Image (tube, rainbow, N blue to C red; front, side, top):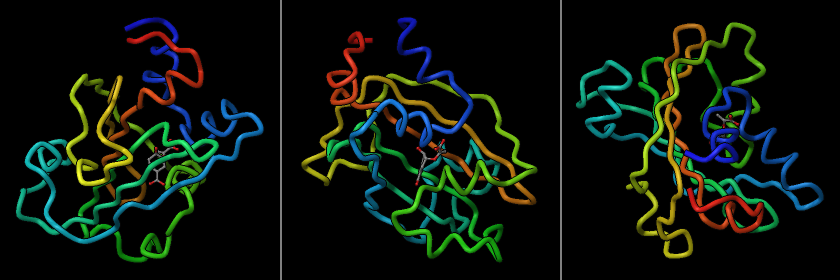
Length: 164
Ligand SMILES: C=C(O[C@@H]1C=C(C(=O)O)C=C[C@H]1O)C(=O)O
């Protein structure tokens, strides 16, 4: 991985904040693609340490800067752990902004991937064009939340980042 990409992929602070800063005067916006209850994918269940047939909260978003999707993200949490967290009504507000306000937040290791995301295929405007992907599990008062983020080539173009 090139050094400029490492700065993005390996950073453990809020991606929402980083994108807001990098976008400069171009507006940052969370576009909600899907928020639903369902079963996690096998590898997601494994990452969370839960059974694959356990109901989970699934949230998919595009993080847009100046109306262009720079990152697509899918977050997964066991439904039973979400009680009282008030995340159902999050809508187009950033999950990251909420997470990083939690005083007891712990972030697990980051894992990088060159795979394309599997969740946005039906969104033609976002047709998987990921340069790097990553995932990590956040822990906050009994909640384990898997966040998977894929950095898209439109971000590389706008920020003049290398191809990988
Ligand atoms: C984890 C963060 O949250 C971001 C915001 C998300 C959302 O609103 O669903 C999802 C993943 C992240 O890209 C962050 O900002 O670091």
